[in-house]
Length: 175
Image 1: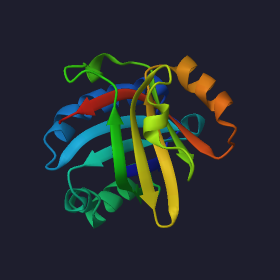
Image 2: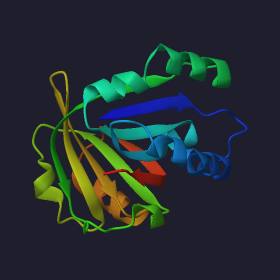
Image 3: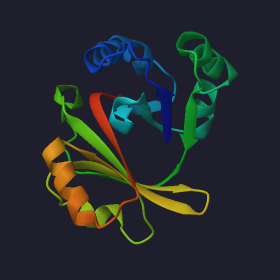
């Protein structure tokens, strides 16, 4: 799994970003090895990017190569960031025919954790998917929530200040 972040230019308002996300879906739906992509804004809109689930690391490496970083520098005049995670477990609570394209206010929550297992939280209201992740010695859990209220309620229950919240207005599932 990879999470990308790029600084949002001042002129890219949320509605314009969403339009660009939607316009790029056909390109990303053809990427070899991509299982899903959650387009996101983060840090209260200061950054944007994607949360990508790959069938293999080679596909991710092929996408996020030197040309990708150069393209970001050239187009947006800033550095792109790509964080790689190993997926230890992936839980899904939706039906196989669930239409991710109809979600318009989904959120992802990334929490540093060594104590919580994704399966323990799948019954939480609004959780659609969870990923148990590893990056070096640090463990994380990433949840996909169907709406803002559910994710905010969950954050209040967590008792943790170490989390990252991503608004994910556009989702692409290639599985």
